[in-house]
Length: 320
Ligand code: TXA
Ligand code: MG
Image (cartoon, rainbow, N blue to C red; front, side):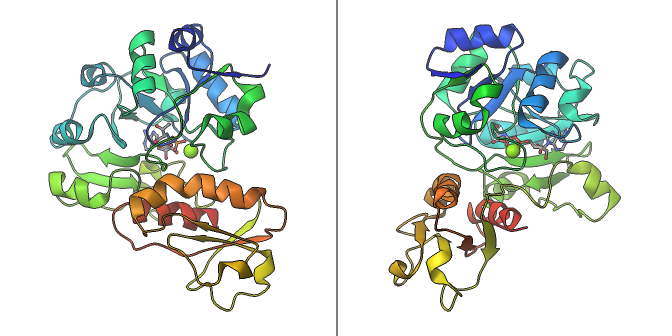
């Protein structure tokens, strides 16, 4: 089997209804989608990605009203976040109903949900009429795909269809927020919606203490080593004075001095814009990794604000 790349949403919906796997475009990254309430279909996602079963999936829906069918309650505060950020790159973790298979949630009492802001994803969600479980459409532990070609490189012979919606606009995955029974918000993953924007709507957001039992339970699947390219990634303070620059691929938000010294240079945004940088991050990592003379990748962290938080999180995890 080798999945074809198509723009045929009706065919994709048919594959989904029959329990198959379709890679779908979203505004963040491509997802690997299956009927969220069909445990056998969901099991195929884990198989195709080599994903461990302790790592739960995000459920995508077309409309706000579908959320009620998947969760037991919507705590205070979550409502305002849905209103402001959906459709969009914000995932909310809420108490699940029994109809959501344990496989989707890795046995947790909660389910992660979002409405994606992409016309093709929306079209598929409406045409199929189903909630879709979808992690990023890459092999487990590897860089997330932001084009249909990225998906094909890793998964073509493991899935049924790739739905083409062009390159992803945001380029990093959704921000994940756990919503407690008391409405308390905990940020499980920085992503496409900046922390500052969330706090402006919902007040202070807590960070999980990953070392604690509670923190570990809230945020399963947040593995330190992730987004791993083939080449060794190191975080550096400066690109000056690096050993053997001719073997180094540089990953920088802004233009660097004397780029000719290095094996390759990827500048994420000529103007140093964090949102533009995020949208280019994963494709740049892949390009560096594909170059034969790049033995090591050196990256500098961005300012820790706005989408810089999500970029830095992915860089740190690529470097572990
Ligand atoms: O932008 C995105 O979020 C993309 C697109 C396809 O929507 N999806 C995505 O899924 O990036 P992925 O592969 O990162 O996996 C979802 C992560 C899990 O690793 C886990 O950390 C968290 O979401 N998650 C899912 N369900 C959860 C739950 N019930 N409690 C806590 N965390 C959960
Ligand atoms: Mg992923």
